[in-house]
Length: 183
Ligand SMILES: [Zn+2]
Image 1 (cartoon, rainbow, N blue to C red):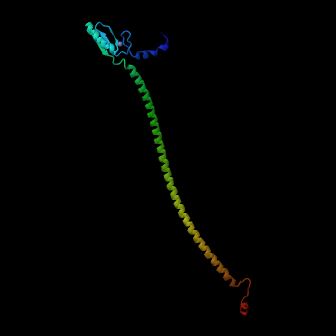
Image 2 (image 1 turned 90 degrees about the vertical axis):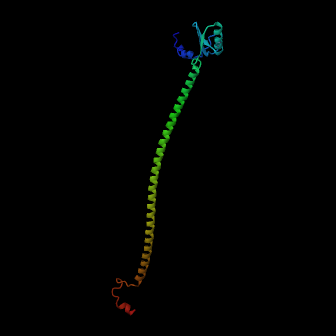
Image 3 (image 1 turned 60 degrees about the horizontal axis):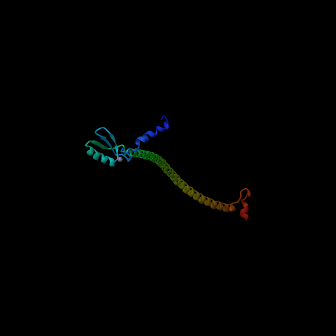
Protein backbone atom coordinates (compact mmCIF):
# COMPACT_ATOMS: atom_id res chain seq x y z
CA UNK A 1 0.00 0.00 0.00
CA UNK A 2 2.97 2.28 0.55
CA UNK A 3 4.25 1.60 -2.97
CA UNK A 4 4.62 5.09 -4.50
CA UNK A 5 3.86 3.76 -7.98
CA UNK A 6 0.19 3.48 -7.00
CA UNK A 7 -0.06 7.18 -6.21
CA UNK A 8 -0.31 8.52 -9.81
CA UNK A 9 -3.10 6.04 -10.51
CA UNK A 10 -5.40 7.65 -7.94
CA UNK A 11 -6.62 10.59 -10.10
CA UNK A 12 -7.23 8.28 -13.06
CA UNK A 13 -9.38 6.02 -10.89
CA UNK A 14 -11.34 9.06 -9.71
CA UNK A 15 -11.87 10.11 -13.34
CA UNK A 16 -13.09 6.67 -14.42
CA UNK A 17 -16.75 6.80 -15.48
CA UNK A 18 -19.10 5.74 -12.63
CA UNK A 19 -21.23 2.71 -13.26
CA UNK A 20 -24.75 1.75 -12.33
CA UNK A 21 -24.85 0.31 -8.81
CA UNK A 22 -27.75 -2.00 -9.62
CA UNK A 23 -26.54 -5.57 -9.28
CA UNK A 24 -25.11 -7.09 -12.48
CA UNK A 25 -25.74 -3.94 -14.53
CA UNK A 26 -22.38 -2.23 -14.80
CA UNK A 27 -23.62 0.26 -17.45
CA UNK A 28 -22.32 3.82 -17.20
CA UNK A 29 -24.29 5.69 -14.56
CA UNK A 30 -26.02 8.87 -15.63
CA UNK A 31 -28.18 9.42 -12.52
CA UNK A 32 -27.78 9.37 -8.77
CA UNK A 33 -30.67 8.55 -6.47
CA UNK A 34 -31.61 8.75 -2.79
CA UNK A 35 -34.50 6.84 -1.24
CA UNK A 36 -36.50 8.51 1.47
CA UNK A 37 -35.10 5.93 3.92
CA UNK A 38 -31.59 7.08 3.15
CA UNK A 39 -30.25 4.45 0.75
CA UNK A 40 -28.49 6.01 -2.24
CA UNK A 41 -26.73 4.84 -5.37
CA UNK A 42 -25.98 5.43 -9.02
CA UNK A 43 -28.11 4.31 -11.93
CA UNK A 44 -27.93 4.04 -15.69
CA UNK A 45 -30.80 5.69 -17.56
CA UNK A 46 -32.70 2.38 -17.84
CA UNK A 47 -32.51 1.65 -14.12
CA UNK A 48 -33.22 5.29 -13.23
CA UNK A 49 -36.52 5.00 -15.13
CA UNK A 50 -37.31 1.83 -13.15
CA UNK A 51 -36.59 3.63 -9.84
CA UNK A 52 -39.62 5.88 -10.22
CA UNK A 53 -41.78 2.88 -11.06
CA UNK A 54 -40.46 1.01 -8.00
CA UNK A 55 -41.09 4.04 -5.79
CA UNK A 56 -44.68 4.19 -7.00
CA UNK A 57 -45.10 0.49 -6.36
CA UNK A 58 -43.65 0.82 -2.85
CA UNK A 59 -45.43 4.12 -2.15
CA UNK A 60 -42.10 5.55 -1.14
CA UNK A 61 -40.20 8.48 -2.52
CA UNK A 62 -36.93 8.47 -4.45
CA UNK A 63 -35.03 11.53 -5.55
CA UNK A 64 -33.32 10.95 -8.89
CA UNK A 65 -30.85 13.55 -10.15
CA UNK A 66 -28.85 13.48 -13.36
CA UNK A 67 -25.12 13.19 -12.91
CA UNK A 68 -23.99 16.40 -14.48
CA UNK A 69 -20.30 16.27 -13.92
CA UNK A 70 -19.35 12.71 -13.06
CA UNK A 71 -19.95 11.10 -16.46
CA UNK A 72 -18.62 13.83 -18.76
CA UNK A 73 -15.68 14.56 -16.44
CA UNK A 74 -13.21 12.24 -18.21
CA UNK A 75 -14.26 13.75 -21.54
CA UNK A 76 -13.77 17.23 -20.14
CA UNK A 77 -10.41 16.19 -18.77
CA UNK A 78 -9.34 14.70 -22.13
CA UNK A 79 -10.69 17.76 -23.89
CA UNK A 80 -8.80 20.01 -21.52
CA UNK A 81 -5.58 18.08 -22.11
CA UNK A 82 -6.16 18.23 -25.87
CA UNK A 83 -7.00 21.95 -25.78
CA UNK A 84 -4.01 22.66 -23.56
CA UNK A 85 -1.76 20.81 -26.01
CA UNK A 86 -3.34 22.68 -28.94
CA UNK A 87 -2.97 25.94 -27.04
CA UNK A 88 0.70 25.24 -26.42
CA UNK A 89 1.24 24.38 -30.08
CA UNK A 90 -0.58 27.57 -31.13
CA UNK A 91 1.46 29.59 -28.63
CA UNK A 92 4.66 28.15 -30.06
CA UNK A 93 3.47 28.84 -33.60
CA UNK A 94 2.53 32.38 -32.62
CA UNK A 95 5.92 32.96 -31.00
CA UNK A 96 7.59 31.51 -34.08
CA UNK A 97 5.49 33.69 -36.38
CA UNK A 98 6.30 36.73 -34.23
CA UNK A 99 9.97 35.81 -34.41
CA UNK A 100 9.75 35.43 -38.18
CA UNK A 101 7.89 38.75 -38.40
CA UNK A 102 10.59 40.44 -36.34
CA UNK A 103 13.31 38.86 -38.50
CA UNK A 104 11.53 40.04 -41.65
CA UNK A 105 11.11 43.51 -40.19
CA UNK A 106 14.83 43.72 -39.35
CA UNK A 107 15.73 42.35 -42.78
CA UNK A 108 13.47 44.95 -44.37
CA UNK A 109 15.09 47.76 -42.37
CA UNK A 110 18.56 46.50 -43.35
CA UNK A 111 17.55 46.25 -47.02
CA UNK A 112 16.04 49.73 -46.95
CA UNK A 113 19.32 51.07 -45.55
CA UNK A 114 21.28 49.21 -48.22
CA UNK A 115 19.03 50.59 -50.95
CA UNK A 116 19.43 54.13 -49.58
CA UNK A 117 23.20 53.74 -49.40
CA UNK A 118 23.32 52.33 -52.93
CA UNK A 119 21.09 55.13 -54.21
CA UNK A 120 23.43 57.73 -52.69
CA UNK A 121 26.48 55.86 -54.07
CA UNK A 122 24.76 55.66 -57.45
CA UNK A 123 24.19 59.42 -57.46
CA UNK A 124 27.83 60.00 -56.50
CA UNK A 125 29.00 57.73 -59.31
CA UNK A 126 26.65 59.47 -61.77
CA UNK A 127 28.10 62.84 -60.74
CA UNK A 128 31.66 61.49 -61.05
CA UNK A 129 30.84 60.01 -64.45
CA UNK A 130 29.37 63.30 -65.67
CA UNK A 131 32.46 65.11 -64.37
CA UNK A 132 34.80 62.60 -66.03
CA UNK A 133 32.91 62.90 -69.33
CA UNK A 134 33.23 66.69 -69.20
CA UNK A 135 36.96 66.43 -68.48
CA UNK A 136 37.42 63.92 -71.32
CA UNK A 137 35.63 66.29 -73.69
CA UNK A 138 37.86 69.15 -72.54
CA UNK A 139 40.98 67.00 -72.95
CA UNK A 140 39.91 66.02 -76.46
CA UNK A 141 39.32 69.69 -77.34
CA UNK A 142 42.73 70.60 -75.88
CA UNK A 143 44.36 67.77 -77.84
CA UNK A 144 42.72 68.91 -81.09
CA UNK A 145 43.85 72.47 -80.44
CA UNK A 146 47.39 71.33 -79.66
CA UNK A 147 47.48 69.14 -82.79
CA UNK A 148 46.37 72.12 -84.89
CA UNK A 149 49.04 74.27 -83.27
CA UNK A 150 51.64 71.56 -83.89
CA UNK A 151 50.58 71.48 -87.54
CA UNK A 152 50.89 75.23 -87.80
CA UNK A 153 54.30 75.11 -86.15
CA UNK A 154 55.43 72.35 -88.53
CA UNK A 155 54.32 74.46 -91.48
CA UNK A 156 56.09 77.48 -90.03
CA UNK A 157 59.25 75.42 -89.52
CA UNK A 158 59.28 74.20 -93.12
CA UNK A 159 58.73 77.75 -94.32
CA UNK A 160 61.61 79.02 -92.17
CA UNK A 161 63.90 76.18 -93.39
CA UNK A 162 63.06 77.05 -96.95
CA UNK A 163 63.81 80.71 -96.35
CA UNK A 164 67.06 79.81 -94.57
CA UNK A 165 68.40 78.32 -97.82
CA UNK A 166 68.26 81.74 -99.44
CA UNK A 167 69.78 83.64 -96.52
CA UNK A 168 73.63 83.94 -96.69
CA UNK A 169 75.50 82.56 -93.74
CA UNK A 170 77.45 85.46 -92.09
CA UNK A 171 79.84 83.02 -90.39
CA UNK A 172 80.72 81.22 -93.67
CA UNK A 173 81.17 84.48 -95.63
CA UNK A 174 82.58 87.34 -93.48
CA UNK A 175 83.05 89.80 -96.42
CA UNK A 176 80.23 89.22 -98.75
CA UNK A 177 79.92 92.72 -100.24
CA UNK A 178 81.78 92.42 -103.59
CA UNK A 179 81.20 88.71 -104.21
CA UNK A 180 77.51 88.70 -105.03
CA UNK A 181 77.90 91.81 -107.20
CA UNK A 182 80.41 90.10 -109.50
CA UNK A 183 78.36 86.87 -109.71
ZN1 LIG B 1 -28.31 -0.06 -14.67
